[in-house]
Length: 184
Image (cartoon, rainbow, N blue to C red; front, side, top):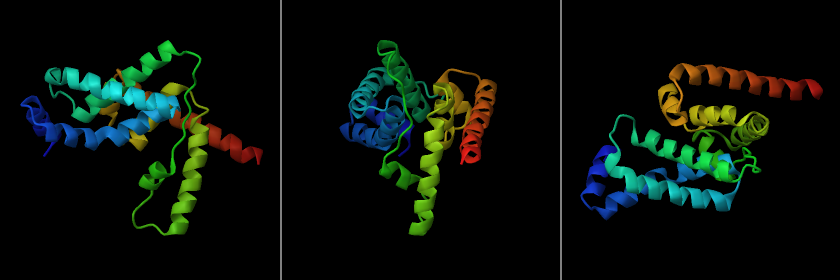
């Protein structure tokens, strides 16, 4: 059953549909929020807030974008509010082993997976040095696999702005990686 069908079921009172839709997005949303906040506790609270807000506004979901895009936009706005309330906090890109395992290919050897994880960890450490908006665009595009248009919708920017930001973010990341290589 697709998201739109589940939403119709939820609006007609089906509790099973609520659970299915929640389970479909809870892990990905948690990882996105955790990467933005670098706080497990705050991420759990924000995740609950995102689902609560989505449930309250579900009747207003018009389907102009995918439900996933709509949900991530709510999450992004919650993270922005989180930083408005706690401006001293600095987000950091870190990922747990489960997330890294999910990024590995299913048919890879253990050795290839370990090498891939080492490279991913190095890239993520370099991403942490980038400005927040660069981290966000790279995460949405390459970890969450959102399209340019979906990323633009989530970030509240035009597709052209996201393409440009993605290009600058990739160049900045390449420069960070190049600095590390040249200093060794």
